[in-house]
Image (cartoon, rainbow over all chains, first blue to last red):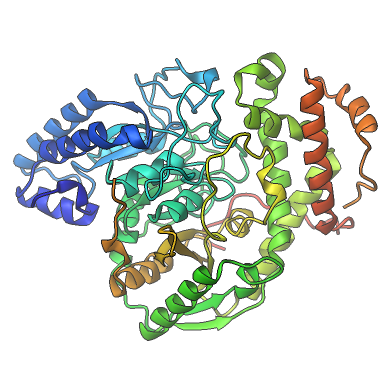
Length: 464
Length: 63
């Protein structure tokens, strides 16, 4: 094996278990690559090299002694810098928290460490998972590894860039209005927003408490599944946490998909606004592949994409204001110029407008469920086309443009994954989403993994 | 949505004074554009709801 950073989590886990590689060597390879390459991307805010090496040595000792905690044992991963980490600063990519060092780990971080994962460091993010990365913030903007003049998507920007650039094997992101799937799509990785309530948010900076979800990005769907296997589970300290039965997501990746029924929401990505012709072609081809694998794919009409978009946006705007109100009053100058305005905007909405949006969410959830009757999955585009170039000033209210293709599944709470389905002539990845019923991540993993195995897209990596 | 008419910048400025936020004139101009833009999109949100149409809570695993 020449380059350990090209391994997937599943494969590396098997090699570690057999003693063919060590966690220390694996971790060392990633730390070396971070040192060599990350100055072009700025995906990391903090690299915890010493802690990572110590955790890797501990994993090797345990594995050598016959103790294997599971498939994440000895696997190097990284965290969006809104995940609290004991003894390691958690900045939120903001001047407001640039020196904040939490005393305890977020529940998800605790679970990863318990599973033997090695934490490499903390990753750049849109400020508090909301505002863009602007020059008035204390950390540089994360760059897209496929072309560094372009944005990597967000808000889990560092997570998408670091996974794609082989700077970690998996990364934690968060998704309130598409923040896992957006960078996963623009950086060409896999990623999954789990069902609302499946993964604890305790110890993660909130953006919108009734929509926030935490989940993994990795190079393949199977790698995301192995991460979700250790992340999922009830947490009494998160009031949104659900008590759902334990599912083996890693095993679900090897299920046959013959007979799986997929509802194609074409009207979302080819409606009043349309994806690029290359994206359309790639999605049509993905439909053909899924059909060849034995799935049925039918076009189904769902509520208008703009309904989900505005519903989710009002809820996020109001809840984000409630969370950050004190700081936008006391220290507004410490926010980036886009973040500050996005957090201020919620002050202008009435209680009636907010409650109407909540009621609309309920209605859209019921209507989506009704339209999905008889189907296991929904399929649609992940994003409209190429990412934006880095240009100043950046749009303050990005949501006034095209509707978000990710938002439907934030509004309904369903699990939704991003799967790479090719590359455009501009070199940027093309992606589609697969969404399942609430708590049916297993079907999403089954179809996503089957698609990845049937196509060659996972062999393409950005050149840095 | 029941918000009837988009406020003018002047009306919005008055309203901004009641929010308790320290806002610069530039902030107010940006926020006015953002609010009016969202208000237009909010036309899609129905105004009248049955009493039973309550917001969702956490999913029940047994649903």
